[in-house]
Image (cartoon, rainbow, N blue to C red; front, side, top):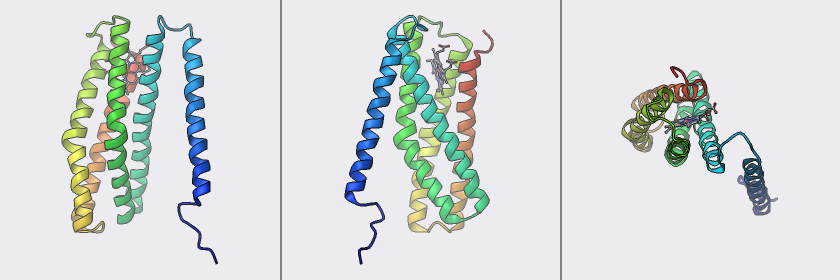
Length: 195
Ligand code: HEM
């Protein structure tokens, strides 16, 4: 009897990969059609920067929020293996996805400010820049090193160990505060207070 392959048959995987690429390209092509057919913005460059900026923000902030919800669920379950899994996944997306995407959000934001000659002293732009600096420093000085330490603790002491679990809980709590900072930046970008 044939044993089922956990990752699916190669042909299934090829089909899934093809569909993923086709969907990605179709979204990109249609978004470019929208971009060249919008009359909302003064230039196509501004429209492009805004599209990149907001899409990146959706991925970054929405992804972080999803992780926060999953972390809360894992904490309620009190299962060490689940806590360790969420910590590993958070470490992966934090370093490989949120870091680069956050930089793209910042660059596209700067692109918009330069393109429209906006005032760098405008309250919501200052809030965006200061907020980015806070989240960048939190990521590189606290969350990144903590994630590495947790990986090491899981390998040496195991996921069930009290020290490992305490480190995971502490790191997830700091990540939650960081997510709060991001949500405040989004509120400032949308509502443009004090202007
Ligand atoms: C760091 C995290 C940031 C996030 C999550 C974020 C998110 C957003 C979002 C969701 C919008 C759409 C608001 C709307 O259209 O109503 C927006 C717009 C904008 N953001 Fe950001 N932003 C961030 C940082 C920055 C920074 C650092 C700058 C400037 C250097 C900036 C400049 C802008 C500009 C110019 C707009 C367009 C405003 C408009 O057209 O009304 N953003 N941002």
